[in-house]
Image 1 (cartoon, rainbow, N blue to C red):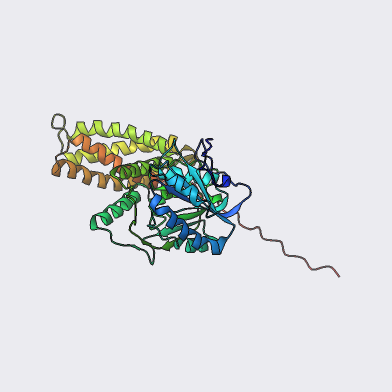
Image 2: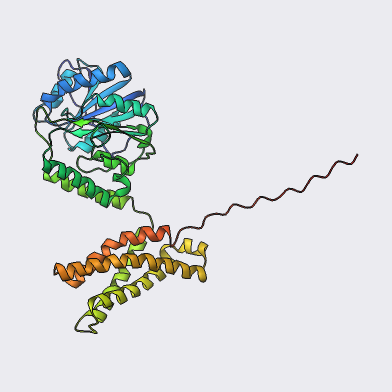
Length: 416
């Protein structure tokens, strides 16, 4: 822990030590309060006073004495942290953390949550682009039972102010990319890149978080224990003072974050399935050369691809049935049951094969890509399809049958 020395006259209670170690939120802190709102800042000295005035105007009537506002500043060159400490003299709910060895909005939010005492944890940007009054509706949603309440630009009543067509396209494109890479996470809310939300501490307590970039909500959705979600519409405002922190690097971090979460949420069987698929790639590549290459049999690209792929499917089924899904296969049985599994496996892979052939022809015949590189790309794109569908249908665990009730013997009439 590093102790931050406050300016002379600042309340000692307003100064927060910077946590170290893993980004993990404790189950609870004493004495508990109802809400902890984190405000991550960097060069926001011109916005901070107005922001805190509006935040306290919203929260004080509803949670007087039962909330705190934790300003987490990344050692801003404009002295935002010092401004926050002076303002903490005016508003007793304000606490300040000054970070010097770490940077980044997402980690700032989590470090704030680590020192927070609230049963509900929240975050809002410091640039006044999120209207503070939306917090009142988020709080009502949490009180009504939501594990997570999100301020959304795309929910009913939401929108953006004067965004350009390019900015709108970039925002939509980022969301579509998230839906492609991580649909089960990004698809849970209409605005997964929102920077204003509330979450129950219990939903993320004990979970080690590992965010990248600015999109902390995606990390929370991907790793938290969240059952019920409520979205509240709001109109995104333009910044009044200061400069935007959005850069091209943030989009790269966003993509890396999506991939990291995708890998972290893969089922335990997937590495085995991928290894089996890799062996199938070897079979597929070798036989594609044998059947389709002009230096070998030269039977044509489409015909050669179909034959090579079917041989790879047989190879993959044998390995998956005896290794990847061995425990489920034993429950399902052999003989006719195994033939049914192979038929389902073949059908699912054939549907993927149709897509693979289309992609291969498109790359080779239209784009002029090397046939072997194009074949590898096509295989990679259908691997996810094959796994999810086969796990759901080919090797679905048998449903436990409920024992039929044993009929009771009719009671004999009592002998008089």
